[in-house]
Length: 513
Ligand code: HXC
Picture 1 (cartoon, rainbow, N blue to C red):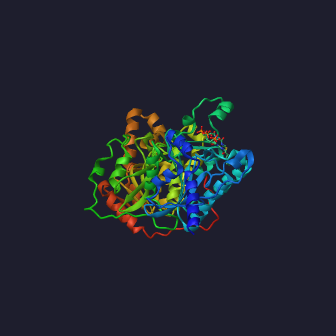
Picture 2: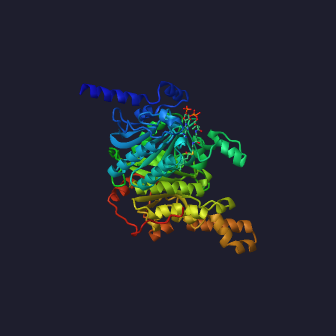
Picture 3: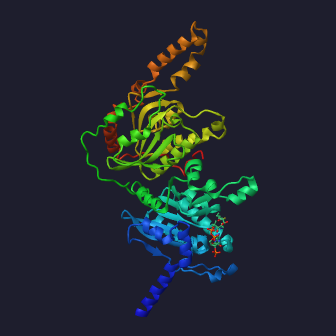
């Protein structure tokens, strides 16, 4: 038996050496960690249990028979984050550039299927040259097998993609289907076609970083939800994300200990809204006053006119969707609508309660927005809020104008608790715009049109720029003193904890994609 055990240990050692010291050195020289080093940072110490360590590739074409490395180009298995089980795969760039082979795909699919059966998240660390070119269609099939499992697992278990190197061609579509994408500045990039193809086809000259680097995807395309300066910071923030999300759609959302401190009043909120209705303020200051500790912002630099992210409130993990009056006055445009909608759907799928903080002047006008489909894209956010059955609470801090009033989790679309601050202005449109339309003739024929315009604006403001007409109809459940908001939210989320709501039986809805 001893011989057999020794032989097993030897085989294990060979697998751990991977493609060898030289390749590992090259990986480090690029400022990147190896597949196993990454897992050590991601997972709780000594919790990684590797699977399929001895699986190696089967191809004999183009000299591949000489590159048979145990484990092939991916490390797979299970481990723990904060004591909770997760399934992981970590592509090993030192083996044929982490390229995806038939056996590679089989290993990944295997842990995905297990994760789906037992209800635990899948975290994929991507660092790959794409489809293993020597294998041809077999490798493409492997990608499709992964895409299918990504799709079937969507909404059942959280799926997180961490891009730590190249991720190009069709390979990008696995991260794209997953719930969150993390990237690292300067060492990771994602694109469907690289700079060379771009130069040939469109004659644009662009670097990899410009075309598909971390900041590009975090600000321009919205593909990346989180971006950090190095791999360690990135992996530690994946751990942090796990503090807010459950292991599957049926499990309870993680909780933290919460001890009520005093009356939970936040006096600063009484003076945060500026006197002039057109003056900006930072909604993140409102968020900071309302939540227990830190705000974990998602998509921080993409469409910053809307804020989304996770926090704990009264110990409970919640998702926050908030207009940001300090960016484009908090207007809803195409990107803001898409960003908000996907987040609302993630939270709803995984039972994470939603808090909406509303100060929105409406949808952004203009040909650019109309021609690019603000109608169908704005509808995504509306659809997502309408469909969501988790506890949903709205606080209108100031403007709630036009269609945006309806969209931002209004009472009419099943908002459970709708609060307004006394500074709320709830109307079809802002006073100036409204007066220009409905009093056009009267103003034009007045002796002093300017004075008449201002008088009408004052009249309209006095009548509509407040929360009381909506409150009189029951569209607002309570007009509250801002300082009391945290206390009210803890009460309301507590009240709603056993909420049951349904959508009609169907195969699936048809969200305007
Ligand atoms: C096989 C690959 C490979 C691949 C890299 N390697 N990519 N082997 N299939 N796709 C091998 C290299 O031959 C090399 O082996 C080793 O990995 C390291 O690669 P280098 O090129 O030396 O590394 P680097 O200079 O860092 O460049 C990395 C890279 C480049 C930018 C990723 O390797 C590259 O352009 N690879 C091809 C990318 C590509 O076009 N993939 C197909 C995309 S289409 P040796 O032994 O020489 O060191 C696709 C379709 C998916 O993926 C469709 C799904 C629907």
